[in-house]
Image 1 (cartoon, rainbow, N blue to C red):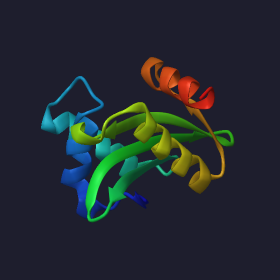
Image 2: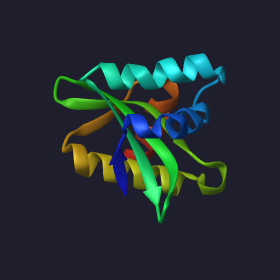
Image 3: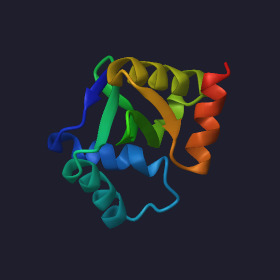
Image 4: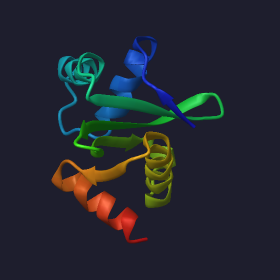
Length: 115
């Protein structure tokens, strides 16, 4: 289940985003999360399974579609199928097409669309 990010989950969000970034510096991760808080065109969601947050997905909303900026899963939940589940849930919730925003997210979105 996707849950909209709240300030209460800041540390969890930072930890999950770290899985999708080369930079692991806490200041950088905090700034990344805060960017989602401050920009109304960016949306961040945590993926909850049972009682635990196991993933994160973040978008930039642009001209009627959502550009995937971040997607990450806890190591024990990784795999294309789980990433595809996050993308399916996000597209259904956002009610708009999802495209990639980076080389990495573009490759994932393309594989997801062609599954």
